[in-house]
Amino acid sequence: MDMNLVSGTLEQKLDRLIEAIERMAPAKVQDANFEEADCFVWDAEHMALQAVPAVNRIDISLIQGVEQVKQQLIGNTERFAEGFSANNVLLWGARGMGKSSLVKAVQASINSKMPENKHLKLIEINREDIHSLPALMKLIKKAPYRFILFCDDLSFNQDDVTYKSLKSALDGGIEGRPDNVIFYATSNRRHLMPREMIDNERSTAINPSEAIEEKVSLSDRFGLWLGFHKCSQDEYLSMIDTYAEYYALDYPLDQLHAEALEWALTRGNRSGRVAWQYIQDLAGRLKIAI
Image 1: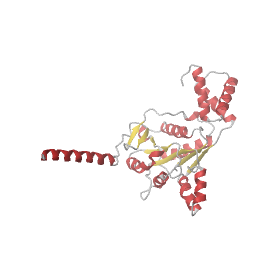
Image 2: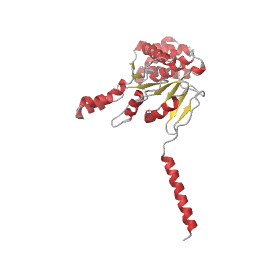
Image 3: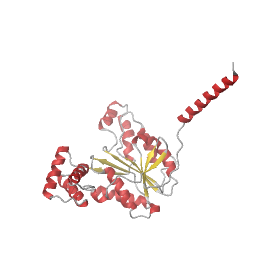
Image 4: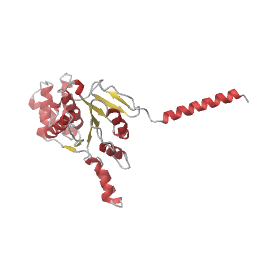
């Protein structure tokens, strides 16, 4: 037998084995350049932050119909940005009422009043990547900035145990949550879990109260709950008027309102999102880019 051939075959197999092990090993967390942008997206697969130089957001003055929760979120975020105590925030409720838009708009509004080296950073993390929160917080806790970790449309379903990772991250474990990190999330559900899931736990558990407490207690980790509710017709038309004025859409008021109400009727809903969609349609018909 040719020993050189045997040796070569063994080396090839060892090389393939090493490559396979390296692929299975957790990715090393990559350093980030936080001066590059004010907003980032967390790439859990590659354990890296991706800068977002052009953020999809609107001016805070355009978010109407939620004035009370807007002021609460601004106050909480300002205190955090200035280095004072602030709460994790859960923005929950009716779809299309500007929950995620408000988070991004508040960050931009606060940064516009602060020196660049004190800018508040926003990091968006997907719900599916919640398990990687400890690695992300380890990356940013020593950075000379303050961070909002933002998860949009957060919710959990049956047999989903990811919520335990989030509870641990919000509590911070034995080290505590880093002082320069706060967590904001949006959800259509106040308790982050569907009602039928909670009811099922209640009906099947040996100790129903403990089973429910385990799952519902996640929302208790958010010190500030901000509820968003469906808007009235007057609030909806106020949104339409605000958009039309901001983008200088020259259109008869009676016709504007009549079309906007008909648009909402065809959608079966009145919300900030529906108002924005009508304004986009109107601007397109008027040949105006917004």
